[in-house]
Length: 146
Image 1 (tube, rainbow, N blue to C red):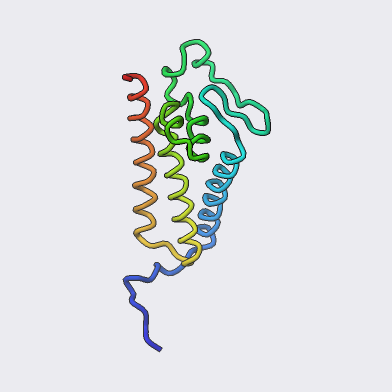
Image 2 (cartoon, rainbow, N blue to C red):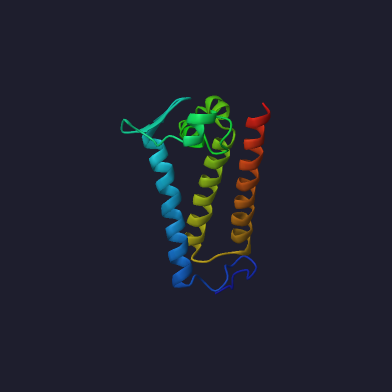
């Protein structure tokens, strides 16, 4: 039997806590994507089975562009339904949120399939989180400036 390349192997497998953590994160991300696909959205509202989502109190008083999160649900749902132009108009970070969720799903599936976490997995998750945070800030600034 030929030994495999040790640099390609995951570190000593997943502990039960790491496996549970990865499964939980995967379930949350998949749940968000499935709910988003079940929702319907336009530029003004987002609904799930005909029930409209909660309204932001800042949006009611000050308008769409004041609250950094206003429109993010609608934009994310529109991006999940491949309406990227409308998603960008509603909130530029909606597309980034979808890409981050899909990337997280791919990474956690890879961790679970390989039964181990590589240093690359941790780096990708860290960069993904930082990119999402920076993207939300930049998107909010774009909304205020444009």
